[in-house]
Amino acid sequence: MIISKTPLRMSFLGGGTDLPAFYRRHGGLVVSTSLDKYIFVAVNRKFDQRIRVSYSITEEVGTATEVTHPLVRAALGKAGIDSGIEITSMADIPASGTGLGSSSSFTVGLLNALNAYKGEYSTAADLARNACEIEIDICKEPIGKQDQYAAAFGGFNLIHFHQDESVIVEPIVCARQHINAFEDQMLCFYTNRTRSASNILRAQSRRSEDDPRVADALSAMKSLALDFTKSLYAGDITAMGATLHEGWVLKRGLSDGITDEEIDRYYNAARKEGAIGGKLLGAGGGGFMLVQAPKERHEAIRRVLEPLRCVKMPLSQEGSRIIFYHPSTT
Image (cartoon, rainbow, N blue to C red):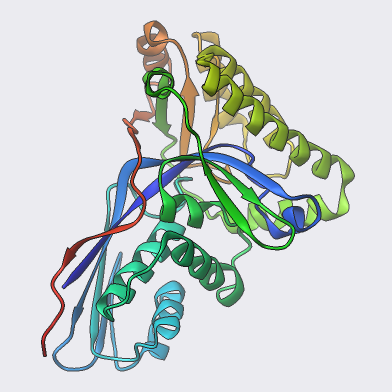
């Protein structure tokens, strides 16, 4: 039995600049953190040499090519495992469409567990690169690279996406009390709906190639990612919230489906009650909404957003790791 533990992530600024349509021309930059919320993947040898995969449904098939789940099928193929394995996944947060990078966390965690199952050690860089290959190149998902690197490395980082396809994960080194102060001002609300990011990101990629205004907005979001980080270094938590708000204003114009009247109503209500800034996490359209506000305004914001569930999202320094390793001897 092998069990991997892989964090979900929260992206603050620069999302969309990690899409190939943008970073291959301009370079991308995202600031994000891993969360103390995880996806767990367990793998074990299966006695009858079939394959059993258990997630929201359970599949039992004869060979890897028969697996319906595209990420599992591709990961098994990449690992060179064709039969005789059981795979089970569990998540602290609903694992689809919540804006926390769950698909990439699952892929990274699955690769980590499968490699450990084979007795092979995986570096964070290898996990992230191979997860990108599975999701983007093999499964043809119209996504970027930030989620895979955030999940594999963990921590609070600036992630640079270069035109030559190289990726640099730069840890944000600052006084811990600054990060704690920012974390104390965070509120996360579940919008009670999930969505597929694919259509939103597909449209955004097309527009970043065809519409100079979208490319300009994404370039501005790269600059805001740097501004946000500089404010964190300086401990200027209010300026971080103001930068988040600027980023949200830019992001909502990138493509249709990122926001709607209901989401805008929630966000504006939070701002009226003292929120400095915030954003919808992930591609938009649903999932979790982040709000930053002074602690003394939290109760009023919770009250005005009462239909939405407020969920604590502690930050984490952990990347994907193996938490249980008991390889089969048969």
